[in-house]
Length: 217
Image (cartoon, rainbow, N blue to C red):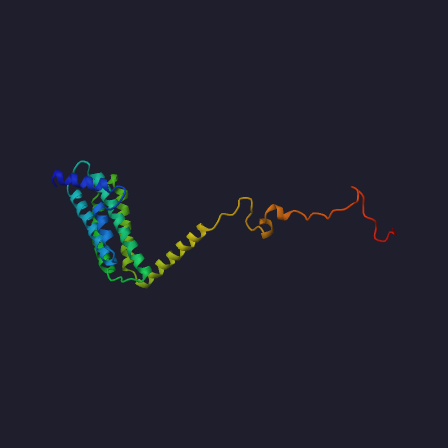
């Protein structure tokens, strides 16, 4: 790889430090509304990162570890995004014909990632965590995409229900701090409702008791 190509890879990786897609890739995704089209784009982006990683691992250049680290993080974000698209398709009951092709592509990428890890490059420590994350994420994605579709749908729906329940709990108004858990409704009423009823007015002096019922007037 010549210096110009290396600098291009470096600038691309630095650009996407906070986002795993370039601006052009994000624009392409916005135009792709159908799930199969979005998955094809994500696969293309993932393969592009793998090609760039292959070039970086093939040559020992100063500063390559930072580029490798960022490319691995971008790749991991892309794989996560593909899983999100597939899960959303399952929730909506959309066509899932693209899943086998995604799984096959991920198996190939996983083999390359594991090969790079086994080679133990001398600068591995600088991006080992990102490489491990990429391997684990890809392996998990492959396992989900090759499992029985009924089981995958069950898992997705259960996770969706759990998230919905958590959102409902967060939307509930907070319980006042002075109300103990399990307090009765009476204890939760305002203080003025818990005061004793006022006595009726009387003409007797203070301290004077009313006459006994059996005492003659």
